Amino acid sequence: MNEPLRWPAEAIWEQVAPLLPTFSVEILPAVGSTNTELMQRARAGQTEPILLVAETQTAGRGRQGRDWVSQRGDSLTFSVGLPLAPCDWSGLSLAVGLSLAESLHPNIGLKWPNDLWVQGRKLGGILIEASSIGGLSYLVIGVGLNIQAQSAEGLRTPPAALVDWLPGITAADALGRVAAPLILAVQQFASEGFAPLQARFHARDVLQGHMVNTSDGLEGPCLGVDARGALQLQTPAGTVGIISSEVSVRPAQWKETV
Image (tube, rainbow, N blue to C red):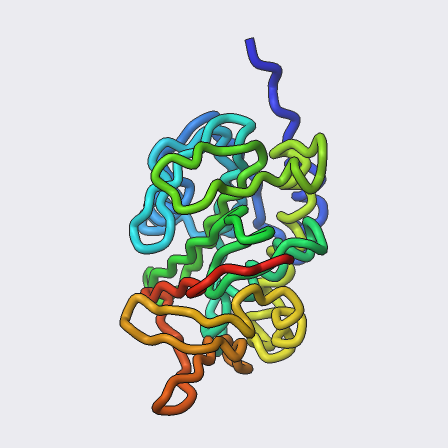
């Protein structure tokens, strides 16, 4: 029988509760999707701040409808639900990714708009959803991180694994590193926006300086992101700012060495 995972729920609660007194931490053995679960609860009137962790996720959702299935201990999958209404939502996924990367390892890079990458391989992803419920804006931030090596079936490149950079780390260890700083970072983003984070994102931006292709047919060198988190792409017609997270961006020739 598998040993029980020792999640640092109480330690995370102690760090966050002074800022959010109604905050709670919940660990589920299995769930379809932590994001879906929190959105359903919010629509039923449960809009308190919460960290929901799934040891196994059977129907997780990534960006653009991609599946994210995780097995116990192999991945860290969680969602944070917050009643939050930022003045400007632009750049939120970049702020979330930056917080995660900075909490984990200096070699982790960020691929616009919501992926964590290491040496040209995806380590994790972010899915942000929001809903207006009874006049209240409720935000759900879903995070999936590869702890152990994952299957590369159907993928262009094998996924990265956190244990390759932090030997011996477990899903519970990783949660303890990222959860409280992430919630604090989102609270700060709500009041200050992305602009104060632009330089720190720049230091981890794996697309800047590379030729990239977009799913809507653009191609050119990536110039980084602006103060609102929009990707800046140099095209024959001039610089184009890409805001929509529905647009996919891929390096034309990946030579990332971060």
